[in-house]
Image (cartoon, rainbow, N blue to C red; front, side, top):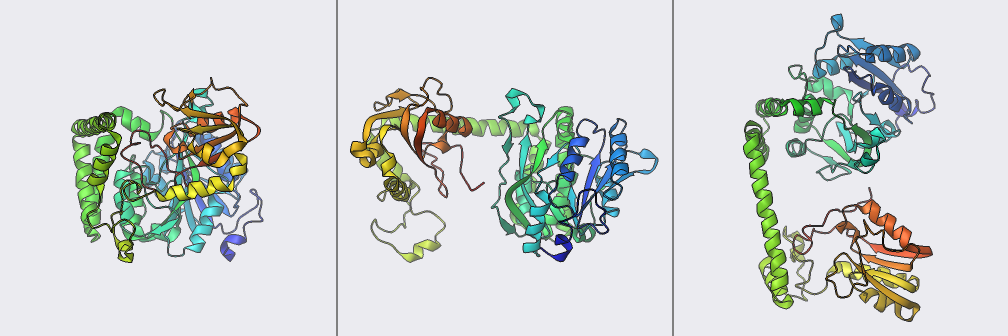
Length: 494
């Protein structure tokens, strides 16, 4: 850590900070339900060289009193600000008020109904220290439904996909284009160098509500490198009283988004950003905002056409004989300039299209089979007793041999002639507990939507001391043909 950062680590949350490294800015308006929890998540940070600026945007409920209470309790850490005459001036003006009073070298924003994870500041500071060319860092966001404590909300939480390569520095203006297609990318969960707010002019005060954060994010991503992390540091509370929910319910969302898109078109032109794909994306999103009903109809028609195509392919798989179907599929997706089977030309490594689009079935054996079989051979001694395999029992027979006393095959469809147990692993209450000494589960979990429930089932039906041998695809293309309707997940280290 730099001296600026490391000197704060030993201080307690109530200790005075002469020169904070981070200024956290929390703007709020009528936030009495959640502001306590948001402030608590700042107090719980493992990095302690922070100050918190609480900016009141003219609240009329108890949140003004709550914020003032914290500022009085921690005067060395927190400050309370408001506009003249306690006016409501909107989110952009309130963020700029906080920025004008910030003392930290780094700036972080936290909405008053959301929370940070405890290591948020510490880990983001380390990233900015390691990448001095990065203007800001942001990570994944958890959509937080379970805050209600209701049973039906417990499983609704999820971490939204980033939509861009993670754990790397992304140069402009790529992220500006992604923002248009992936609207969850915001500066709210980020940490930024204070100098960029001065360089880019802060927030646009003409935008009082929706898209004010995306406007500033666009300013940064059009001009400066940003580090995108796979880490999740931010819990985004989903509730009906949020700014986004109210805008959508009132019908203002499309109009405010169109205003943002017009601003982006003008601003990027004024800044001399020449990017054809960005211009095309802006025009497409403007059309969708002007004609939301037509946009929804177009999406529905595209979806129905896609589903019809998938059904026709499924029908073809059942009607056309297997060898002929595989031959037709291989011929359709064969790349004309692919090297002959059994030959290699190193120049092919520069190609942008895969040599095979069907996992190598048209050229031999898919390469993942090599790693799967090497893995099973390494742990073959665990394939013993009563063994369960999904789909068929080929690996049980190949690697279990005489150690297997009973072999079962589980499949989701009763049409599988090999199946001795018909069940969905995510909903398999009828499968007895403590039944199997070993379960062989290769390339299956990504095809199950409720992975958590499936893993719980696997744990339940294993006997004490039993072994699950599982493999999952990592860096692989998605099978858009045989498993198009159920290839739900890709698994990363996160």
